Image (tube, rainbow, N blue to C red; front, side):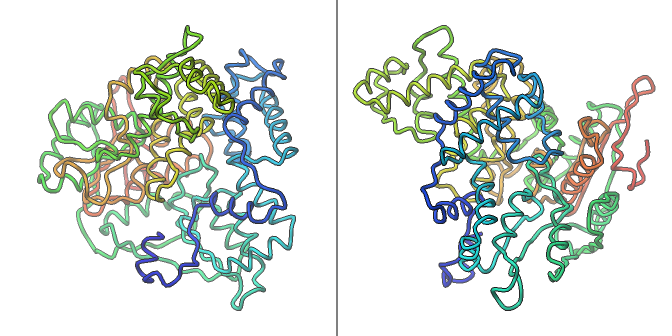
Length: 566
Protein backbone atom coordinates (compact mmCIF):
# COMPACT_ATOMS: atom_id res chain seq x y z
CA UNK A 1 0.00 0.00 0.00
CA UNK A 2 2.85 2.38 0.80
CA UNK A 3 4.39 1.79 -2.63
CA UNK A 4 1.11 2.44 -4.43
CA UNK A 5 0.46 5.58 -2.38
CA UNK A 6 3.90 7.04 -3.07
CA UNK A 7 3.54 6.31 -6.76
CA UNK A 8 0.10 7.92 -7.01
CA UNK A 9 1.13 11.00 -5.03
CA UNK A 10 4.61 11.24 -6.54
CA UNK A 11 6.06 11.18 -3.02
CA UNK A 12 4.51 14.54 -2.05
CA UNK A 13 3.30 13.35 1.38
CA UNK A 14 6.25 11.77 3.22
CA UNK A 15 4.65 12.42 6.62
CA UNK A 16 1.94 9.79 6.04
CA UNK A 17 2.60 6.79 8.28
CA UNK A 18 2.07 3.22 7.11
CA UNK A 19 2.36 0.24 9.39
CA UNK A 20 0.81 -2.71 11.13
CA UNK A 21 -1.05 -2.32 14.39
CA UNK A 22 1.88 -3.73 16.31
CA UNK A 23 4.49 -1.46 14.77
CA UNK A 24 2.40 1.70 15.17
CA UNK A 25 1.31 0.97 18.73
CA UNK A 26 4.83 0.03 19.84
CA UNK A 27 6.08 3.36 18.50
CA UNK A 28 3.41 5.15 20.55
CA UNK A 29 4.44 3.25 23.67
CA UNK A 30 8.13 3.98 23.20
CA UNK A 31 7.63 7.69 22.58
CA UNK A 32 5.06 8.22 25.33
CA UNK A 33 6.17 6.18 28.31
CA UNK A 34 8.04 8.01 31.07
CA UNK A 35 10.46 5.10 31.36
CA UNK A 36 12.00 3.05 28.56
CA UNK A 37 9.81 0.32 27.12
CA UNK A 38 11.60 -2.96 27.44
CA UNK A 39 10.58 -5.96 25.39
CA UNK A 40 11.23 -9.19 27.26
CA UNK A 41 13.51 -11.33 25.11
CA UNK A 42 13.07 -15.02 24.38
CA UNK A 43 15.46 -16.11 27.08
CA UNK A 44 13.83 -13.97 29.71
CA UNK A 45 10.35 -15.05 28.70
CA UNK A 46 11.30 -18.73 28.75
CA UNK A 47 13.03 -18.36 32.12
CA UNK A 48 10.03 -16.63 33.64
CA UNK A 49 7.52 -19.17 32.35
CA UNK A 50 9.78 -22.02 33.40
CA UNK A 51 10.08 -20.58 36.92
CA UNK A 52 6.31 -20.16 37.28
CA UNK A 53 5.58 -23.64 35.92
CA UNK A 54 8.08 -25.32 38.24
CA UNK A 55 6.70 -23.32 41.16
CA UNK A 56 3.22 -24.73 40.53
CA UNK A 57 3.84 -28.41 39.85
CA UNK A 58 0.57 -29.17 41.62
CA UNK A 59 -1.29 -27.50 38.72
CA UNK A 60 0.22 -29.79 36.07
CA UNK A 61 -0.70 -33.18 34.66
CA UNK A 62 2.73 -33.88 33.18
CA UNK A 63 6.41 -33.31 33.85
CA UNK A 64 7.01 -29.54 34.11
CA UNK A 65 9.43 -29.63 31.17
CA UNK A 66 6.59 -30.85 28.98
CA UNK A 67 4.29 -28.03 30.08
CA UNK A 68 6.45 -24.97 29.44
CA UNK A 69 5.67 -24.56 25.73
CA UNK A 70 1.97 -25.22 26.35
CA UNK A 71 1.96 -22.52 29.02
CA UNK A 72 3.70 -20.04 26.71
CA UNK A 73 1.17 -20.60 23.92
CA UNK A 74 -1.77 -20.41 26.31
CA UNK A 75 -0.58 -17.13 27.84
CA UNK A 76 -0.47 -15.49 24.40
CA UNK A 77 -3.95 -16.75 23.53
CA UNK A 78 -5.48 -15.68 26.85
CA UNK A 79 -4.19 -12.17 26.27
CA UNK A 80 -5.49 -11.80 22.74
CA UNK A 81 -8.72 -13.84 22.56
CA UNK A 82 -12.17 -13.16 23.85
CA UNK A 83 -13.68 -15.79 26.14
CA UNK A 84 -15.84 -17.11 23.28
CA UNK A 85 -13.10 -17.41 20.66
CA UNK A 86 -10.66 -18.83 23.21
CA UNK A 87 -12.94 -21.77 23.89
CA UNK A 88 -13.03 -22.53 20.16
CA UNK A 89 -9.27 -22.25 19.60
CA UNK A 90 -7.81 -25.73 18.90
CA UNK A 91 -4.31 -24.78 20.07
CA UNK A 92 -5.65 -23.51 23.38
CA UNK A 93 -7.87 -26.55 23.90
CA UNK A 94 -4.94 -28.83 23.03
CA UNK A 95 -2.69 -27.14 25.58
CA UNK A 96 -5.21 -27.60 28.41
CA UNK A 97 -4.36 -31.28 28.67
CA UNK A 98 -1.07 -30.31 30.34
CA UNK A 99 -2.92 -28.70 33.27
CA UNK A 100 -5.36 -29.95 35.89
CA UNK A 101 -7.96 -27.36 34.91
CA UNK A 102 -8.42 -24.21 32.90
CA UNK A 103 -8.07 -22.24 36.13
CA UNK A 104 -4.59 -23.71 36.49
CA UNK A 105 -3.30 -22.27 33.23
CA UNK A 106 -5.05 -18.96 33.94
CA UNK A 107 -3.28 -18.75 37.30
CA UNK A 108 0.06 -19.25 35.58
CA UNK A 109 -0.84 -16.58 33.01
CA UNK A 110 -1.83 -14.17 35.77
CA UNK A 111 1.49 -14.57 37.59
CA UNK A 112 3.38 -14.14 34.33
CA UNK A 113 1.56 -10.90 33.55
CA UNK A 114 2.01 -9.60 37.11
CA UNK A 115 5.79 -10.08 36.90
CA UNK A 116 6.01 -8.23 33.57
CA UNK A 117 4.07 -5.26 34.88
CA UNK A 118 6.02 -5.09 38.13
CA UNK A 119 9.31 -5.04 36.22
CA UNK A 120 8.33 -2.69 33.39
CA UNK A 121 8.45 -5.35 30.68
CA UNK A 122 6.14 -6.11 27.75
CA UNK A 123 5.87 -9.00 25.32
CA UNK A 124 4.54 -9.12 21.75
CA UNK A 125 0.89 -9.29 22.77
CA UNK A 126 1.31 -6.40 25.20
CA UNK A 127 2.17 -3.97 22.40
CA UNK A 128 -1.52 -3.49 21.68
CA UNK A 129 -2.91 -4.12 25.16
CA UNK A 130 -0.55 -1.70 26.90
CA UNK A 131 -0.98 0.95 24.23
CA UNK A 132 -4.72 0.82 24.77
CA UNK A 133 -4.25 1.11 28.54
CA UNK A 134 -1.89 4.07 28.13
CA UNK A 135 -4.27 5.98 25.87
CA UNK A 136 -7.18 5.27 28.21
CA UNK A 137 -5.41 6.35 31.37
CA UNK A 138 -3.33 9.34 30.24
CA UNK A 139 -5.37 12.10 28.64
CA UNK A 140 -2.35 14.23 27.73
CA UNK A 141 -0.70 11.35 25.91
CA UNK A 142 -3.94 10.52 24.15
CA UNK A 143 -4.47 14.09 22.99
CA UNK A 144 -0.87 14.40 21.81
CA UNK A 145 -1.23 11.37 19.55
CA UNK A 146 -4.66 12.48 18.43
CA UNK A 147 -3.03 15.70 17.28
CA UNK A 148 -0.21 13.79 15.58
CA UNK A 149 -2.56 11.47 13.72
CA UNK A 150 -5.65 13.35 12.57
CA UNK A 151 -6.76 11.03 9.79
CA UNK A 152 -6.94 7.23 9.85
CA UNK A 153 -7.54 4.63 7.17
CA UNK A 154 -7.91 1.04 8.33
CA UNK A 155 -7.98 -1.54 5.54
CA UNK A 156 -9.50 -5.04 5.85
CA UNK A 157 -11.42 -3.72 8.84
CA UNK A 158 -13.44 -6.91 9.21
CA UNK A 159 -10.24 -8.75 10.20
CA UNK A 160 -9.17 -6.64 13.19
CA UNK A 161 -9.42 -7.85 16.79
CA UNK A 162 -11.53 -6.15 19.48
CA UNK A 163 -8.37 -4.89 21.22
CA UNK A 164 -7.10 -3.29 18.01
CA UNK A 165 -10.46 -1.64 17.38
CA UNK A 166 -10.69 -0.18 20.88
CA UNK A 167 -7.20 1.30 20.52
CA UNK A 168 -8.04 2.86 17.15
CA UNK A 169 -11.14 4.44 18.70
CA UNK A 170 -9.03 6.03 21.42
CA UNK A 171 -6.73 7.53 18.80
CA UNK A 172 -9.61 8.76 16.64
CA UNK A 173 -10.97 10.77 19.55
CA UNK A 174 -14.31 12.53 19.93
CA UNK A 175 -14.24 14.60 16.76
CA UNK A 176 -13.73 18.00 18.35
CA UNK A 177 -10.19 18.52 17.07
CA UNK A 178 -10.88 18.93 13.38
CA UNK A 179 -13.75 20.30 11.37
CA UNK A 180 -15.98 17.61 10.02
CA UNK A 181 -15.85 15.23 12.96
CA UNK A 182 -13.85 12.10 13.63
CA UNK A 183 -11.67 11.37 10.63
CA UNK A 184 -11.74 7.59 10.65
CA UNK A 185 -12.10 5.82 7.30
CA UNK A 186 -12.49 2.03 7.41
CA UNK A 187 -12.72 -0.36 4.49
CA UNK A 188 -14.19 -3.81 4.96
CA UNK A 189 -16.68 -6.47 3.97
CA UNK A 190 -18.36 -8.37 6.79
CA UNK A 191 -19.12 -11.23 4.37
CA UNK A 192 -15.37 -11.84 4.07
CA UNK A 193 -14.61 -12.06 7.78
CA UNK A 194 -12.92 -15.49 7.93
CA UNK A 195 -10.32 -15.09 10.68
CA UNK A 196 -12.31 -15.82 13.81
CA UNK A 197 -9.37 -17.83 15.16
CA UNK A 198 -7.48 -14.51 15.36
CA UNK A 199 -10.27 -12.81 17.30
CA UNK A 200 -11.88 -11.12 14.29
CA UNK A 201 -15.64 -10.90 13.88
CA UNK A 202 -18.03 -9.52 11.23
CA UNK A 203 -19.76 -7.67 14.05
CA UNK A 204 -16.92 -5.16 14.17
CA UNK A 205 -18.50 -3.26 11.26
CA UNK A 206 -21.85 -3.11 13.01
CA UNK A 207 -20.09 -1.95 16.17
CA UNK A 208 -18.41 0.77 14.14
CA UNK A 209 -21.74 2.21 13.01
CA UNK A 210 -23.07 2.05 16.56
CA UNK A 211 -19.99 3.84 17.87
CA UNK A 212 -20.01 6.39 15.03
CA UNK A 213 -23.68 6.90 14.14
CA UNK A 214 -22.85 10.00 12.11
CA UNK A 215 -20.44 8.11 9.82
CA UNK A 216 -21.08 8.32 6.10
CA UNK A 217 -21.51 4.89 4.54
CA UNK A 218 -20.28 4.30 1.01
CA UNK A 219 -21.72 1.03 -0.26
CA UNK A 220 -19.84 -0.66 -3.07
CA UNK A 221 -22.57 -2.74 -4.66
CA UNK A 222 -20.95 -3.72 -7.96
CA UNK A 223 -18.83 -6.84 -8.31
CA UNK A 224 -16.28 -6.23 -11.08
CA UNK A 225 -14.77 -9.70 -10.97
CA UNK A 226 -17.48 -12.32 -11.29
CA UNK A 227 -20.09 -12.98 -13.96
CA UNK A 228 -23.78 -12.62 -13.18
CA UNK A 229 -24.55 -16.28 -12.38
CA UNK A 230 -21.64 -16.49 -9.94
CA UNK A 231 -22.62 -13.27 -8.16
CA UNK A 232 -26.23 -14.42 -7.81
CA UNK A 233 -25.28 -17.90 -6.57
CA UNK A 234 -22.83 -16.51 -4.02
CA UNK A 235 -25.48 -14.00 -2.92
CA UNK A 236 -28.05 -16.76 -2.33
CA UNK A 237 -25.53 -18.59 -0.15
CA UNK A 238 -24.35 -15.68 2.00
CA UNK A 239 -27.89 -14.34 2.50
CA UNK A 240 -28.50 -17.28 4.85
CA UNK A 241 -26.20 -15.66 7.43
CA UNK A 242 -27.89 -13.52 10.05
CA UNK A 243 -24.85 -11.67 11.41
CA UNK A 244 -24.33 -9.45 8.37
CA UNK A 245 -25.39 -6.27 6.61
CA UNK A 246 -27.99 -6.96 3.90
CA UNK A 247 -26.59 -6.23 0.45
CA UNK A 248 -27.68 -6.29 -3.14
CA UNK A 249 -24.58 -7.00 -5.22
CA UNK A 250 -24.78 -6.83 -8.99
CA UNK A 251 -22.30 -8.01 -11.60
CA UNK A 252 -20.60 -5.40 -13.77
CA UNK A 253 -19.70 -8.04 -16.39
CA UNK A 254 -23.24 -9.24 -17.02
CA UNK A 255 -24.24 -12.79 -17.85
CA UNK A 256 -22.01 -15.81 -18.33
CA UNK A 257 -21.89 -19.56 -17.82
CA UNK A 258 -24.29 -20.96 -15.22
CA UNK A 259 -22.80 -22.34 -12.01
CA UNK A 260 -22.45 -26.12 -12.40
CA UNK A 261 -22.94 -28.71 -9.65
CA UNK A 262 -21.44 -32.20 -9.73
CA UNK A 263 -22.70 -35.12 -7.62
CA UNK A 264 -20.38 -38.15 -7.43
CA UNK A 265 -20.55 -41.44 -5.58
CA UNK A 266 -17.19 -41.15 -3.90
CA UNK A 267 -13.96 -39.17 -3.89
CA UNK A 268 -12.33 -41.28 -6.59
CA UNK A 269 -15.18 -40.55 -9.01
CA UNK A 270 -15.24 -36.88 -8.03
CA UNK A 271 -11.52 -36.44 -8.64
CA UNK A 272 -11.80 -38.30 -11.92
CA UNK A 273 -14.63 -36.08 -13.15
CA UNK A 274 -12.69 -32.93 -12.23
CA UNK A 275 -9.59 -34.24 -13.98
CA UNK A 276 -11.55 -34.87 -17.20
CA UNK A 277 -12.94 -31.34 -17.09
CA UNK A 278 -9.48 -29.92 -16.48
CA UNK A 279 -8.19 -31.75 -19.54
CA UNK A 280 -10.70 -29.85 -21.68
CA UNK A 281 -9.29 -26.49 -20.62
CA UNK A 282 -6.77 -25.06 -23.11
CA UNK A 283 -3.18 -25.16 -21.83
CA UNK A 284 -2.82 -21.41 -21.85
CA UNK A 285 -5.86 -21.12 -19.53
CA UNK A 286 -4.68 -23.62 -16.92
CA UNK A 287 -2.65 -21.03 -15.03
CA UNK A 288 -5.92 -19.14 -14.62
CA UNK A 289 -7.71 -22.17 -13.16
CA UNK A 290 -7.88 -23.18 -9.50
CA UNK A 291 -9.15 -26.13 -7.49
CA UNK A 292 -9.91 -24.82 -4.00
CA UNK A 293 -10.35 -27.07 -0.95
CA UNK A 294 -11.43 -26.47 2.62
CA UNK A 295 -8.14 -27.66 4.12
CA UNK A 296 -4.56 -28.53 3.26
CA UNK A 297 -5.06 -32.27 3.70
CA UNK A 298 -7.66 -32.40 0.94
CA UNK A 299 -5.58 -30.15 -1.30
CA UNK A 300 -2.57 -32.42 -0.80
CA UNK A 301 -4.58 -35.54 -1.71
CA UNK A 302 -5.85 -33.98 -4.93
CA UNK A 303 -2.38 -32.72 -5.82
CA UNK A 304 -1.01 -36.26 -5.44
CA UNK A 305 -3.85 -37.51 -7.62
CA UNK A 306 -3.02 -35.04 -10.40
CA UNK A 307 0.69 -35.85 -10.21
CA UNK A 308 -0.04 -39.57 -10.40
CA UNK A 309 -1.95 -38.97 -13.62
CA UNK A 310 0.77 -36.74 -15.03
CA UNK A 311 -1.33 -33.58 -14.98
CA UNK A 312 0.57 -30.29 -14.49
CA UNK A 313 -0.26 -28.78 -11.10
CA UNK A 314 0.83 -25.69 -9.22
CA UNK A 315 0.52 -26.50 -5.54
CA UNK A 316 -0.11 -23.78 -2.99
CA UNK A 317 2.96 -21.67 -3.42
CA UNK A 318 4.52 -23.58 -6.29
CA UNK A 319 6.04 -20.46 -7.46
CA UNK A 320 7.71 -21.60 -5.15
CA UNK A 321 7.48 -18.66 -2.79
CA UNK A 322 10.95 -18.18 -1.27
CA UNK A 323 9.40 -16.93 1.98
CA UNK A 324 7.41 -20.13 2.38
CA UNK A 325 10.48 -22.25 1.69
CA UNK A 326 12.38 -20.23 4.30
CA UNK A 327 9.69 -21.02 6.88
CA UNK A 328 9.91 -24.72 6.10
CA UNK A 329 13.71 -24.66 6.27
CA UNK A 330 13.90 -22.77 9.57
CA UNK A 331 11.38 -25.06 11.28
CA UNK A 332 13.15 -28.15 9.93
CA UNK A 333 16.56 -26.90 11.07
CA UNK A 334 15.27 -26.15 14.57
CA UNK A 335 13.73 -29.62 14.83
CA UNK A 336 16.87 -31.34 13.53
CA UNK A 337 19.07 -29.34 15.88
CA UNK A 338 16.84 -30.26 18.81
CA UNK A 339 16.86 -33.94 17.83
CA UNK A 340 20.65 -33.83 18.02
CA UNK A 341 20.32 -33.15 21.74
CA UNK A 342 18.62 -36.45 22.48
CA UNK A 343 20.81 -38.82 24.43
CA UNK A 344 23.71 -36.36 24.46
CA UNK A 345 24.79 -33.86 27.06
CA UNK A 346 26.42 -31.81 24.32
CA UNK A 347 24.25 -32.26 21.26
CA UNK A 348 25.14 -31.31 17.73
CA UNK A 349 23.70 -30.42 14.36
CA UNK A 350 25.00 -29.74 10.86
CA UNK A 351 26.66 -26.44 10.12
CA UNK A 352 24.01 -25.71 7.47
CA UNK A 353 21.20 -26.15 10.00
CA UNK A 354 23.00 -23.99 12.55
CA UNK A 355 23.65 -21.20 10.05
CA UNK A 356 19.94 -21.15 9.24
CA UNK A 357 18.73 -20.72 12.83
CA UNK A 358 21.61 -19.14 14.75
CA UNK A 359 20.36 -15.58 14.17
CA UNK A 360 16.69 -16.22 13.53
CA UNK A 361 15.91 -14.24 15.61
CA UNK A 362 19.10 -12.25 16.20
CA UNK A 363 21.39 -13.86 18.80
CA UNK A 364 24.64 -12.26 17.56
CA UNK A 365 26.38 -15.49 16.61
CA UNK A 366 29.14 -15.11 14.01
CA UNK A 367 29.67 -17.71 11.32
CA UNK A 368 33.23 -18.32 12.53
CA UNK A 369 31.86 -20.03 15.64
CA UNK A 370 30.82 -22.98 13.43
CA UNK A 371 34.31 -24.19 12.59
CA UNK A 372 33.44 -27.69 11.37
CA UNK A 373 30.70 -29.55 9.57
CA UNK A 374 29.12 -30.51 12.91
CA UNK A 375 28.25 -27.82 15.43
CA UNK A 376 27.73 -28.76 19.06
CA UNK A 377 26.89 -26.93 22.26
CA UNK A 378 30.36 -27.84 23.45
CA UNK A 379 32.06 -26.35 20.38
CA UNK A 380 30.05 -23.14 20.72
CA UNK A 381 30.98 -22.83 24.40
CA UNK A 382 34.62 -23.34 23.50
CA UNK A 383 34.53 -20.59 20.90
CA UNK A 384 32.78 -18.13 23.24
CA UNK A 385 34.52 -19.22 26.43
CA UNK A 386 35.64 -15.64 27.15
CA UNK A 387 32.25 -14.08 26.38
CA UNK A 388 29.82 -14.56 29.32
CA UNK A 389 26.76 -13.01 27.56
CA UNK A 390 27.15 -15.38 24.61
CA UNK A 391 27.65 -18.33 26.95
CA UNK A 392 24.31 -17.46 28.53
CA UNK A 393 22.76 -17.27 25.05
CA UNK A 394 24.11 -20.74 24.28
CA UNK A 395 22.73 -22.09 27.56
CA UNK A 396 19.28 -20.75 26.73
CA UNK A 397 19.45 -22.17 23.22
CA UNK A 398 20.37 -25.58 24.63
CA UNK A 399 17.40 -25.43 26.97
CA UNK A 400 15.07 -24.51 24.11
CA UNK A 401 16.35 -27.48 22.12
CA UNK A 402 15.61 -29.80 25.04
CA UNK A 403 12.12 -28.36 25.45
CA UNK A 404 11.39 -28.89 21.78
CA UNK A 405 12.16 -32.59 22.14
CA UNK A 406 9.13 -33.12 24.37
CA UNK A 407 6.53 -31.40 22.19
CA UNK A 408 4.22 -32.91 19.63
CA UNK A 409 4.63 -31.57 16.07
CA UNK A 410 1.91 -28.83 16.22
CA UNK A 411 3.12 -27.42 19.52
CA UNK A 412 6.73 -27.70 18.37
CA UNK A 413 6.00 -25.54 15.31
CA UNK A 414 4.11 -23.09 17.53
CA UNK A 415 7.01 -22.98 20.00
CA UNK A 416 9.53 -22.30 17.21
CA UNK A 417 7.25 -19.69 15.70
CA UNK A 418 6.26 -17.73 18.81
CA UNK A 419 8.44 -18.58 21.79
CA UNK A 420 11.71 -18.86 19.86
CA UNK A 421 10.53 -15.93 17.71
CA UNK A 422 11.57 -17.51 14.42
CA UNK A 423 8.66 -15.79 12.69
CA UNK A 424 9.83 -12.45 14.07
CA UNK A 425 13.30 -13.17 12.72
CA UNK A 426 12.00 -13.93 9.23
CA UNK A 427 9.74 -10.86 9.23
CA UNK A 428 12.54 -8.45 10.00
CA UNK A 429 12.88 -5.81 7.28
CA UNK A 430 10.30 -7.34 4.93
CA UNK A 431 7.46 -5.72 3.00
CA UNK A 432 3.80 -6.09 3.96
CA UNK A 433 3.24 -8.52 1.08
CA UNK A 434 6.13 -10.73 2.17
CA UNK A 435 4.98 -10.57 5.79
CA UNK A 436 1.58 -11.92 4.81
CA UNK A 437 3.21 -14.79 2.91
CA UNK A 438 5.29 -15.69 5.95
CA UNK A 439 2.22 -15.60 8.21
CA UNK A 440 0.34 -17.88 5.82
CA UNK A 441 3.27 -20.28 5.59
CA UNK A 442 3.48 -20.67 9.37
CA UNK A 443 -0.30 -21.14 9.61
CA UNK A 444 -0.15 -23.86 6.97
CA UNK A 445 2.79 -25.62 8.60
CA UNK A 446 1.08 -25.66 12.00
CA UNK A 447 -1.97 -27.25 10.41
CA UNK A 448 0.16 -29.75 8.49
CA UNK A 449 2.00 -30.72 11.68
CA UNK A 450 -1.27 -31.77 13.32
CA UNK A 451 -1.35 -34.80 11.01
CA UNK A 452 1.80 -36.33 12.56
CA UNK A 453 2.09 -38.14 15.88
CA UNK A 454 5.84 -37.82 16.44
CA UNK A 455 8.54 -35.32 15.67
CA UNK A 456 10.54 -38.06 13.96
CA UNK A 457 7.76 -38.65 11.44
CA UNK A 458 7.33 -34.91 10.88
CA UNK A 459 11.07 -34.37 10.36
CA UNK A 460 11.18 -37.21 7.85
CA UNK A 461 8.25 -35.69 6.02
CA UNK A 462 9.80 -32.21 5.92
CA UNK A 463 13.20 -33.57 4.92
CA UNK A 464 11.83 -35.61 2.05
CA UNK A 465 9.19 -33.22 0.77
CA UNK A 466 10.51 -30.18 -1.04
CA UNK A 467 6.95 -29.04 -1.72
CA UNK A 468 6.09 -28.42 1.94
CA UNK A 469 7.37 -24.88 1.69
CA UNK A 470 4.96 -24.11 -1.11
CA UNK A 471 2.22 -22.75 1.09
CA UNK A 472 1.34 -19.50 -0.64
CA UNK A 473 -0.39 -19.34 -4.00
CA UNK A 474 1.57 -17.93 -6.89
CA UNK A 475 0.63 -14.32 -7.52
CA UNK A 476 0.78 -11.74 -10.26
CA UNK A 477 1.05 -14.36 -12.97
CA UNK A 478 4.68 -15.13 -12.14
CA UNK A 479 4.37 -18.88 -11.71
CA UNK A 480 7.30 -20.91 -12.93
CA UNK A 481 4.92 -23.13 -14.90
CA UNK A 482 2.41 -21.15 -16.96
CA UNK A 483 0.50 -24.27 -18.06
CA UNK A 484 -0.59 -25.83 -14.77
CA UNK A 485 -3.69 -25.68 -12.59
CA UNK A 486 -3.41 -24.20 -9.08
CA UNK A 487 -4.49 -26.19 -6.02
CA UNK A 488 -4.97 -24.26 -2.78
CA UNK A 489 -7.14 -23.81 0.30
CA UNK A 490 -10.09 -21.49 0.82
CA UNK A 491 -8.19 -19.31 3.30
CA UNK A 492 -5.21 -19.03 0.94
CA UNK A 493 -7.47 -18.05 -1.96
CA UNK A 494 -8.66 -14.81 -0.36
CA UNK A 495 -7.63 -11.84 -2.48
CA UNK A 496 -6.99 -13.94 -5.60
CA UNK A 497 -9.05 -14.49 -8.73
CA UNK A 498 -9.21 -17.12 -11.47
CA UNK A 499 -11.08 -17.61 -14.71
CA UNK A 500 -12.34 -21.04 -13.64
CA UNK A 501 -12.73 -22.42 -10.11
CA UNK A 502 -13.57 -25.94 -8.88
CA UNK A 503 -14.79 -26.35 -5.28
CA UNK A 504 -14.75 -30.08 -4.40
CA UNK A 505 -15.67 -32.05 -1.26
CA UNK A 506 -18.63 -29.82 -0.38
CA UNK A 507 -20.07 -32.24 2.16
CA UNK A 508 -21.34 -32.01 5.72
CA UNK A 509 -18.49 -32.64 8.13
CA UNK A 510 -16.08 -30.92 5.78
CA UNK A 511 -17.91 -27.65 5.12
CA UNK A 512 -18.98 -26.82 7.71
CA UNK A 513 -16.47 -28.94 9.60
CA UNK A 514 -17.47 -31.17 12.48
CA UNK A 515 -15.87 -28.75 14.92
CA UNK A 516 -18.26 -25.97 13.82
CA UNK A 517 -21.04 -26.50 16.34
CA UNK A 518 -22.04 -22.93 17.25
CA UNK A 519 -24.14 -20.62 15.04
CA UNK A 520 -21.21 -18.17 14.85
CA UNK A 521 -18.75 -20.84 13.69
CA UNK A 522 -21.20 -22.15 11.07
CA UNK A 523 -21.68 -18.63 9.73
CA UNK A 524 -17.92 -18.17 9.46
CA UNK A 525 -17.69 -21.40 7.46
CA UNK A 526 -20.41 -20.06 5.16
CA UNK A 527 -18.43 -16.84 4.71
CA UNK A 528 -15.39 -18.92 3.83
CA UNK A 529 -17.45 -20.71 1.17
CA UNK A 530 -18.64 -17.33 -0.14
CA UNK A 531 -15.04 -16.11 -0.42
CA UNK A 532 -14.08 -19.25 -2.34
CA UNK A 533 -17.06 -18.96 -4.72
CA UNK A 534 -16.26 -15.35 -5.56
CA UNK A 535 -12.71 -16.18 -6.63
CA UNK A 536 -14.21 -17.35 -9.95
CA UNK A 537 -14.57 -14.87 -12.80
CA UNK A 538 -16.17 -16.97 -15.54
CA UNK A 539 -16.77 -20.61 -14.54
CA UNK A 540 -17.62 -22.14 -11.16
CA UNK A 541 -17.98 -25.88 -10.45
CA UNK A 542 -19.39 -27.12 -7.13
CA UNK A 543 -18.96 -30.82 -6.38
CA UNK A 544 -19.81 -33.20 -3.54
CA UNK A 545 -20.15 -36.93 -2.91
CA UNK A 546 -23.47 -38.66 -2.20
CA UNK A 547 -22.06 -42.03 -1.11
CA UNK A 548 -23.99 -45.28 -1.40
CA UNK A 549 -27.14 -46.72 0.16
CA UNK A 550 -24.99 -48.54 2.68
CA UNK A 551 -22.86 -45.48 3.37
CA UNK A 552 -24.72 -42.31 2.31
CA UNK A 553 -23.12 -38.86 2.47
CA UNK A 554 -24.84 -35.51 2.72
CA UNK A 555 -24.05 -32.47 0.63
CA UNK A 556 -23.16 -29.33 2.56
CA UNK A 557 -26.12 -27.43 3.95
CA UNK A 558 -24.62 -24.37 2.26
CA UNK A 559 -25.73 -25.77 -1.09
CA UNK A 560 -29.45 -25.81 -0.23
CA UNK A 561 -30.12 -22.24 -1.45
CA UNK A 562 -28.79 -23.39 -4.83
CA UNK A 563 -31.40 -26.13 -5.05
CA UNK A 564 -29.17 -29.00 -3.88
CA UNK A 565 -30.99 -31.01 -1.18
CA UNK A 566 -29.96 -33.88 1.05
